[in-house]
Amino acid sequence: MKQIADYSMNEKLNNSDTVRPVWLFFENDKKDWIKVIEKYDLPPQNCFFVKDYLKMTRNFTSQFNWHNDFPHYFLFNNKGECMNKNEVSFSRVDVKSILNQSAR
Image (cartoon, rainbow, N blue to C red):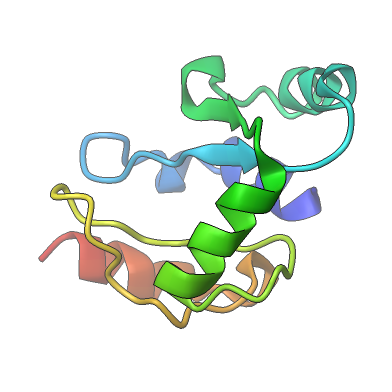
């Protein structure tokens, strides 16, 4: 959750014209996640609760080489295509590289 807080508090990463972060909440009680959304001031329009956790994880695993590790990020282009199916946990993200890649 620290990575989410760092991202949301860093104005230089607010490039919402080119990148729209979307937060998918897979586990735990919805009330717990609502507290997280409020605590880290995440934009609610970018936050989604996953109803069918098992179906979603099967789809993510098969389509995006996801191995159920959290936190995790995926980078999609404006056509909904995954730009890199082998991304690493968000805690190891090279933000400058992502910003340069999304500017292309």
